[in-house]
Image (cartoon, rainbow, N blue to C red; front, top):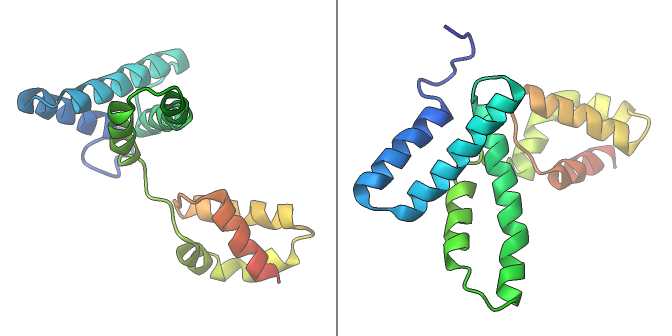
Amino acid sequence: MPEEQETDVSLHDELKARVTAAVKSGDALTRDALRTVLGEAQAEAVRRKVEATDEVVLGVVRKTVTGLKETIPLAKNAGRDTTQREAELALLESLLPKAWGQEAIAAALVSIRDDLRAAKNEGQALGVAMKALKAQGATANPDDVKAVVAAVRA
């Protein structure tokens, strides 16, 4: 058994279950979007010669979300209906971990305030902050981290 089992069900297995539920309920949008993600995650896992871990699945979801955010405005400008793509985007974004806000980031960095102030420059301080946040399992917008680090260093 792998040591990394933090949750009982992997994201991959959860998405497979959601596909089955979507098939039963007739929710074609969810069924198709999640099948695409699962297929691409499996292909990526094969390319990397690893299992389809949560990390691989989330990477595919992030990539798909980024693509949709780029193509939806283009499709709108071309006068095409983007309702289905927008619904798919909302579904996929709901799968991503929620980013920490500036208050949570600031609270997480309290213990390393002196290290942030001692950094030679803003970039080095940002690196120290990102490393500390990653160690805590944080998902944070880099702009928010930059703002918190700048406030600490001011």
